[in-house]
Image (spheres, rainbow, N blue to C red):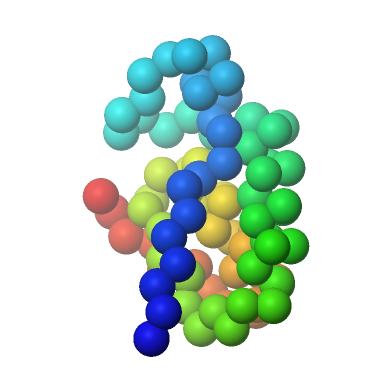
Length: 78
């Protein structure tokens, strides 16, 4: 088994230099592009499951990646 760990794409608060903790700002335009680039990078990896926290920035990033592999995103509250 192999475990791949990825950080979410840039959020709007990352862009502003704001601390976000467990607050839930969305992905910025750059964050969505970063997620799509990671999707391309992982397109040949055999992903069988994708997990993300319930924060929007995390599960939106995960959804973009998981869609390529046709697997659901398992959301887990942090």
